[in-house]
Image 1 (tube, each protein chain N blue to C red):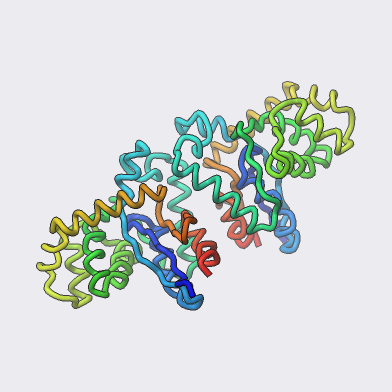
Image 2 (cartoon, chains in turn green, purple; image 1 turned 120 degrees about the horizontal axis):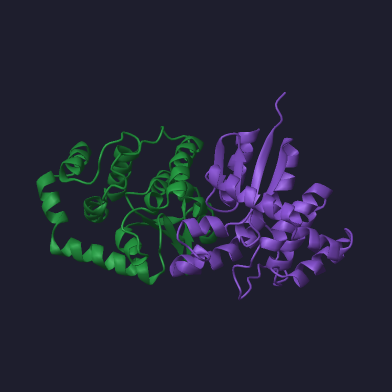
Length: 199
Length: 199
């Protein structure tokens, strides 16, 4: 029997990826689907489209609706009121690097959820070393300084680079995205469709 | 008792607006919600965002996913396989003008559905006089030449202009959009949310 699986591509700056992160585990568990967690960076992809920041900041009316939409969606999913920092979007680079370490060690998903909650439930920044040190400390997953050093190693940098190349190769242009075989689904609104496709 | 209603903003070039057009009537009927049908043109709004055509043509990877997504969505909604013309997007200007006449005379919704079906189920163009003459003829709603002449009257042109101004004033940036009181919902994926908001 073939293994049923979904690749879940998420970027730490994205509130819609946060919604998917909070939902995908349970939804896939009841259907017997494995989730491959794939943190990535939208920055390089947006740059290729000619954007130097979030399109929600570039396109003002779209952005205005976005901020209201994520408030409504948080409520719809039964999540706490969403908090958006003045400094939106937050850089997900260091969080992505640490997640790659964590995924190898078994705490990557828990860490990702904690980072999202810090940003979108507590309204705290997630881009800096101090921010993520605080997350790591509460998780008790080893010496924080060692993890931060490892996060900046050539090996992890090369992994982040390879992920960006893979994302572009399979046509990813936004977050969250879900890949099931050759099918690419974009957006938290397509999570259920991706799951049906994987079943 | 307050009347429950949703304003449904649709553009004839948009496959996602087509999905909503095929769904909104029945969904609102069972909830006792009135639908205010509001055809409009995205062109002037896209121009303000610096786009001279559909963003799905401007952003190639996003466009590739779009064409696959609408195939999947058509199947999900139990609609016939979707047809997309080489000349995408089609101009919705004349169809919008004729719909405004039809809405006053009681056949605007039926006409809108027929135009969408012609484009997205039969794969036929909808931008020209001949295209829409064929639609009007099958509907038997009066002398086609008179309707086409009226569609180009100053009164109807002024109405289309006023609608564009209204769309921009309320922050519409894409199609379909749904307005319930002060709440703006964007996209076919938000139809159910808009309905819950109106209930």
